Image (cartoon, rainbow, N blue to C red):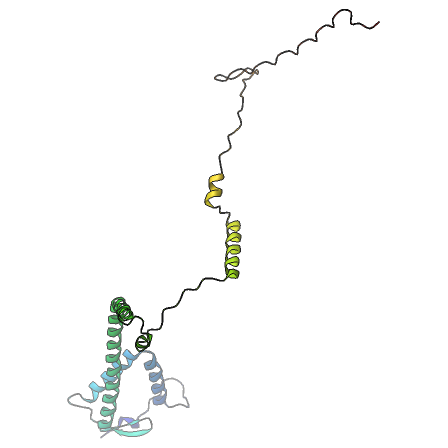
Length: 216
């Protein structure tokens, strides 16, 4: 019987690291990133070791140790069980996550309604409400005079910065009529449709002084 583990084939230049160990490390790196690919390798190996007829060897040198094919099959089956458990758990998690998202709104409304009903039923009995984790209602407090003054100043500054006006200020704004403009023709005559400008009246002549008022 020939043991395939006694043969080593090197591709490329010689390396201090055995070819089988390099393959194992490369496989481990890829498998950590792609679980589905790793599971495919496990399934293929199981199919090969459990095929009928099976391999014509009874042991292999794996990770520096001689391992029987029956032990190899057991190890592969254990890996398959772990991978299957992860896939099953992931599918169940995704299903539960989808169910929670779909029912989160209805669940929230139900819990809020239940708490409101307890507040009505146990009104005035804060000790009983505390057992349900329902604390006392927060009392609304009036802001202090200092805060009121600060808020008014902030609002006024905001109005100035934005250029906004109150209702009374907006109503106080009226339109300003445009000044009338007289349009003249080419030679200075009034244009059609416009009334001629009134001519200025001559200044009245001074009245003559009455006779006998002249100085002597």
